[in-house]
Length: 555
Image 1: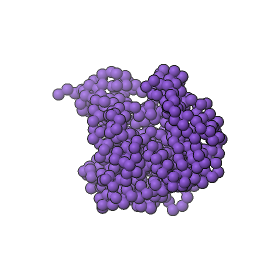
Image 2: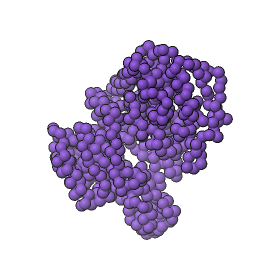
Image 3: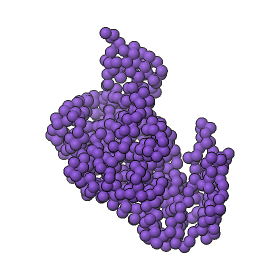
Image 4: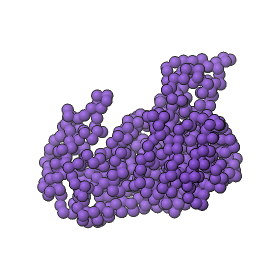
């Protein structure tokens, strides 16, 4: 039997004979350390593995550093393990909740029976630095789930015990850090010394765990206040506590006990209450001069269904909604700006005819009648088909699009006429107290299902396109979200449990030889923790119907 195996490194496109059983960390040194920054993990045959993973057979390997999303996730998980151990060391009786991303960091609450002051934060940071400087190993251990649940409960980690018990997997893996154990659904770095840059600062009634910038891992992300979004987060957490669904283990338990219908009904009612509240606020502001409702949000946030439900609620408030599509105000193709690759940039704000659009809005607000254009995407030109529009005293224009909250879109219109709504998956249920689910995963799963069922795209296609979609959101949507007068959280407590049965067969079609398999495999791994929830009781107006089908609205 050969004592070596052949590894193909995608980073530098080279083959290397390495001793059989070598770890990914050993192999990284043997192939010449091809990355600028230290690796965080590696994709082995298009599946993410920790750097302690050992290769016993020939493999394709691609190393990942912090500048890639997968690498950042590994860094943040490792930092969270260090943080949670430091909190346990400094405040042994405290409970730590790692809640959700906000303000370019991660909001965390330390429950200790009293407010956490600067002195205590300083002690926790000092302990974290000691753990990092000691370069302690993260030791991965795998045991029978029944034994893992017992161990978690002995350590006061009932949330983790309930999660692994209800997920139905026979074995569970956890990480041991110098005697302190924790559970994460993704890999960690080999040791604490990989985590150098971080900070903890007070944030509302908790703390903000700060992390490095993706583009420049040598600098921390700036703290950007997101007070309106944070308020939405707090409302969602309050709802979770009210219904007793603090994490996925609680949700799974409710499903097991036959409470699925009640969970769905409460989630849907909460959303409808939000929509109704926004409509009532618009109606009140209508008396003060509001005539334009601007709705924005990232891909697969449910903007279309929200618009339809909002218009119904506006009518119940005796307001007549009139929709306008921004797509009809594109510049003619030859005038469209191009991106850095020389391709037409249709996501750019400047792909719209801003002066003409603002001029038409001003005419409408002055009581004039306009002829609404239509954009022919085949010819790339604006055409007129005789469609007239004039708003009445009880009317509001409803305008939905990715640029709706950008002040430049309606720069010639006085703010007194505008009401802005930001729609997105703002927060969702956590796996346990230390494992939140990125809201972008909600949106990606929605899009994968919708693209497959209604647009003819495979999961491979959607996953491949997703990084470009995200770059557009970072540039054109997220910087303006705090401009909103109202924020609508389109996530539902039960959502991922309902999406699972639709997503899994679609994701399983991604071939193992495709680079997109790493993301498909990651999504399927965390979906396993959700018990299936029957979706036959979803109302026809449910926002999820936009992605699953079978709804009351036409899309």
